[in-house]
Image (cartoon, rainbow, N blue to C red; front, side):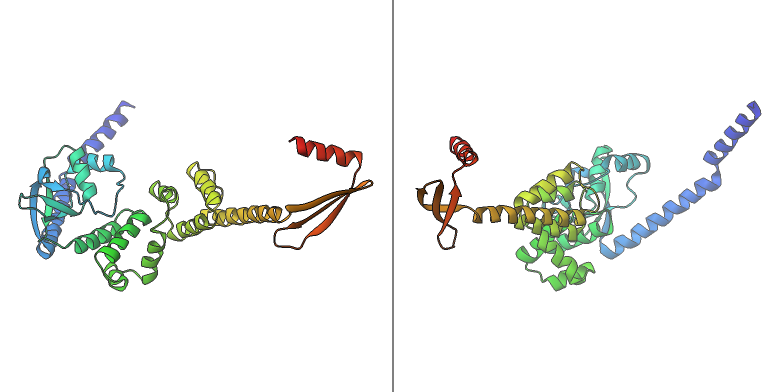
Amino acid sequence: MAKKISLANRKINQKINDPVSQEKKDILRAMQLQELSEQASKVGRLFELPLSIVQPDKNQPRKTFKNIESLADSIRENGVIQPIIVTPKNIDGTHHIIAGERRYLASIQAERSTIPCIVREEESDASILLLQLLENDQRENVSPFEEADALRQLIEVKKLKKADIAKILGRDASWISMRLKISDADENIRKLAQKGIIEDVRTLYELKKFAEEIPEGASEFVKKALDNKISGSFRSAITRYRENWKRKTQILDSTKLDVINVKEVSKEGKFLKIKGSRSGLKAHTYTFEITEKFKKILFEALVK
């Protein structure tokens, strides 16, 4: 048994200290640096900038960044492999991040003092926003509402055309349109996307329509979704909830129609006659026999 353990340990040590493995790592690192240099020559200059002069862009579409801790651990171990992209913004030397805010946040958490940056000449706000949309689209999933807000800003504030945005992003017109349709959804629906519960744009749009038709029903659905109490697909569940609430609404409406507006009440022997009309209908006389049961029901109704 002792020999086997010793042999296993020797193999592990050989793997760790294997000069071939180290050579492969060095080659891989050299290739990465070469690729970064080529990238820098195309889009800007490569610098190692102090983190103190690098700032996030307040208009960055993405507001929520995931797995910062694990990325910080990787940066402590290996450094920042891929530089972030920045642009100079002020004469004081401040640079705003175009792409790579997650790496920036993780570098701060990893307690680094500098970060590799590709510095582009000063870009317009519209160009920066488009670049951020492109970068986010190519990396981790972004909330559809973060994309929607950025698209609305490009169209309404920067006056860009939807067709031009779609061409730059490599998306079709429907991708743009669907996100614009959900951009005015309420905060509760946005929360579902932010928490990663519902991220499908079509489903979010159906929920938004439900909220516009029957706010109370949509509110109940959102609460149950947040509590993880929805079974089956969300889109099917939304359809199911909408139909149920429509039926409830119809029942309530029909109940309202049955309310009689009383105009006259008279008694003839053992009969009580009530003349009245339903909403929008002609007056009609209703006759009730005055039995002991009728008296009891009437008394209880009046007392309540």
